[in-house]
Image 1 (cartoon, rainbow, N blue to C red):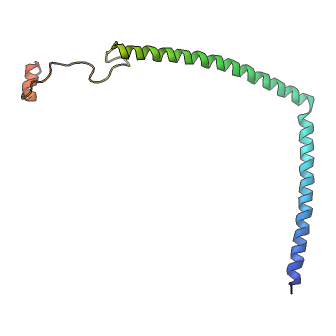
Image 2: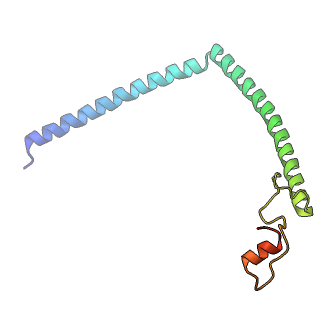
Length: 124
């Protein structure tokens, strides 16, 4: 046999859920109607149009600036690559310098000590 107390709790709980859900749904529909009414207000739509126009203008201006900057950076990169490929600008102060690009002295003679090599180069 089913416990009457448990059955009563279940019936009351189900009724509360149905009534609460219905009340919640009604409140949701009310909020939705108010939001739709506000969105369709001519003043709000005028503000939306103004913001859209400003966003389009800002996007267009930014696109032009970005395009110009990309062209500048591409030109600089092309110039630096051409200098590297053609061996120009091996100055240590330049961006193209790599350690080992310059020769400091004659190559070492096999069998000589580092001290003899330094002495031969005039470094004491």
